[in-house]
Image (tube, rainbow over all chains, first blue to last red; front, side):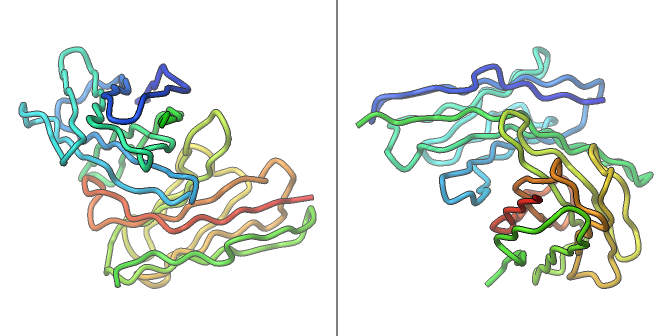
Length: 117
Length: 112
């Protein structure tokens, strides 16, 4: 079974600084997808960024970028110029689809990020 | 507006009283799923559906039922709720599993 590990239950960052959230996963597959979702206090789940494993280039989305290390099975999220609105729970997720009807979608346990004014 | 709608948002009920949480999406997505979120455990998948009349168990299916009679609806049924099912529940949908999930706003269930 695939597992996703977020080793930092909580982190904090000073406003305008940069922070990196770590995520590692365990898989024997070569083709899969990785996601970071953000859950603010409103409880909504919001997609932050998506990475396809077959793409070597790291995904970026404005102030959010990932460091995808396929061989190391690592998928960290970097938030630059942190803003107060970035304070949230962040979940890493792994997804693999099988045309035979089976699938896997697994979330990590989350990292709670606090932003200090 | 593209959305996933869950109802109710909050529910307090008692052990053994059957309940249904509805989920509806207006994006013509094939894939829908239910998750429960508990402190320290992240999101765990309960059931998923690849298309109409196609459902399968996720990681924590015990005590839950689902059905997918129409593409847009995917209700979660608790036939005999118990206190250990007190949790925050999310419904989600996507066109394909490798596409980002669209989440509902969550349903807070308390089983007394």
